[in-house]
Length: 54
Image (cartoon, rainbow, N blue to C red; front, side, top):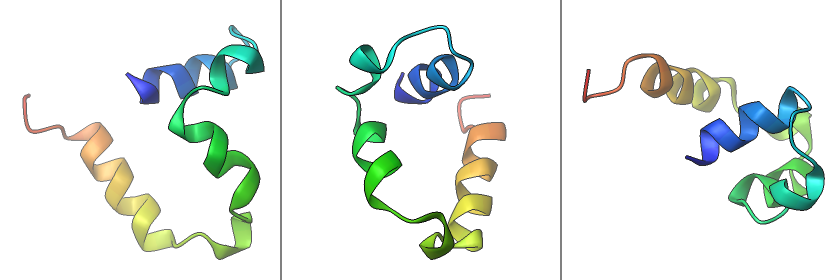
């Protein structure tokens, strides 16, 4: 659910006032991009594109 909320916010369909109540609100403004791990990004993408329930 939160992933869908993130996508909808990134596309500009919902306002930040709705997004601020999700876990993504904290990460958007507290983690500098240069500190993010590429490996973590790849793992997250894997689980997004290949969920277990498919």
